Image (cartoon, rainbow, N blue to C red; front, side, top):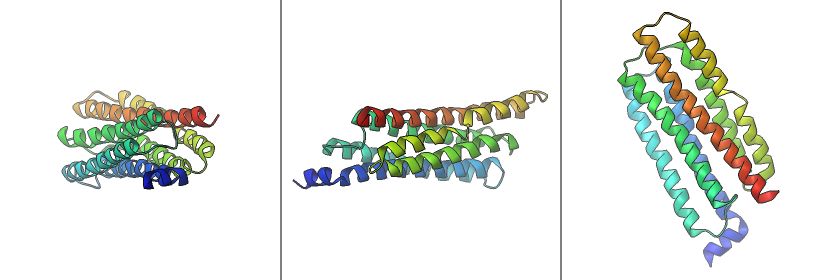
Length: 207
């Protein structure tokens, strides 16, 4: 009876959305760690260790979301779409984790090439978080806000950075930078997938 009451009052939708926001918060923290490490402001080994903790927080939020979905009668968008939305956010965090891990494993020196893609990624996550906050009460506004998460342009920032790197003489360090930039592009691709999933889910449910 209590579960039904929570569903009918919209509390469940807010709980589910809160777990998504927690996932996005973990992704945002991961980008901060990547940025600090890539700029030489944080030791790569320390960033990698802290990233493991952040990834655990994101995984816990995703597990809580899945568990709550199993117990609930309602969700802010269809369950399949909400699951895919959460999975895409998890993929963002995984790609950023790989960047931090490989920055350490490759002993890659700080490089300014990472700055623009990381800024775009951070801005996109922030915009998507705002969209998630709107989802329980204003789903159409959430979909519109989500589309704005693509505007920072992670892919474009990646392409410009890669072009600059490839224009320089090939060295072991430029190879490392090239490989690490692909991790940021992968994070941007997953962010775009999350945006599309949220927007499509809203249109499917509320058109």
